[in-house]
Image (tube, rainbow, N blue to C red; front, side, top):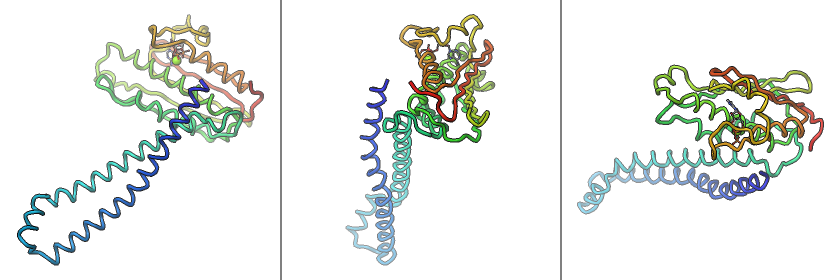
Length: 272
Ligand SMILES: Nc1ncnc2c1ncn2[C@@H]1O[C@H](COP(=O)(O)OP(=O)(O)OP(=O)(O)O)[C@@H](O)[C@H]1O
Ligand SMILES: [Mg+2]
């Protein structure tokens, strides 16, 4: 996992530079193009009747279309580079390579970065509308934790929630799902001076009572071969309890909902 984290952080870093200079230059490029268009307009005003050869040249260009399209193109390029920058900074934030070990961090930033990386699984598909993410963030102090590994816990819990929602969609029509939207709730709150709680719930398939006690066992999975390794919750449990001296448990109603609760100390008790 840490080798993978290093690679992700390395690639994100490499992408960051070229994207920054494309994005930075686009701002100047827009200004220069606007200046040129203004100059062109001034020419047209002062020389309303140019020589025939120039007239033909301008007609060929379809100047009006070019003028409106170039502005739209620059805008969409700017939106595109902004989006890449958000993803890159989320990847860097998610892997937190430069900050392994204990550090006081903003947990909400870690959850938000994880959501950006998971965005491709949340968006609408041909079979269902977008998965709703409802955030109810409380006031949290900075948490002394190993942010990289805690972000992996958020990733595991959120990925499981998406899997559970997809499983619950089996056999349901688009209209049916639209009437009762797939949703993930993320709630955070401070319980006392040294404890915070993070709850991740979904309205997916739920978990049968008889397997609740096995969820955190290594290699326990109900997913088809190749889809799940059964290590996500096992590793999450280790990270929360052993690494952070916290607690992780689950509460589910079959066919309705599942809630995972993480409790961690504000100041770390011990770290493996
Ligand atoms: N939100 C959820 N809703 C319903 N079932 C869940 C949920 N989260 C976990 N489970 C059940 O717990 C099992 C174990 O989860 P875990 O994340 O450890 O492994 P996995 O998702 O199967 O594989 P992976 O190692 O890829 O995460 C899952 O196979 C699933 O049956
Ligand atoms: Mg999993």
